[in-house]
Image 1 (spheres, rainbow, N blue to C red):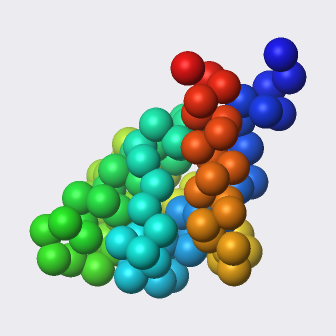
Image 2: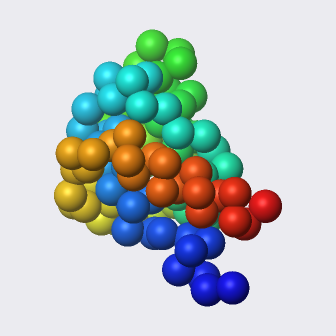
Length: 102
């Protein structure tokens, strides 16, 4: 089985970038933790926790929340990814990758 179908780091980072730039998109197009891999799981969970507790999720707050678990420079790199204009489609791509991993 090709790993391209099991993981899509570009799409994962684009979805996270979208969430960081537009927090409301998190609630309109909510992905699940299992859709993400690697360090991106931690970033997703930090965004989720911040938003559920009434805080804005941005580069600084997410980096602070993760406190070195994921380097701030990596989170910064994620925020430089293109924001997804087709967020619902990209979340579906991540869902499909997740299903194949299970």
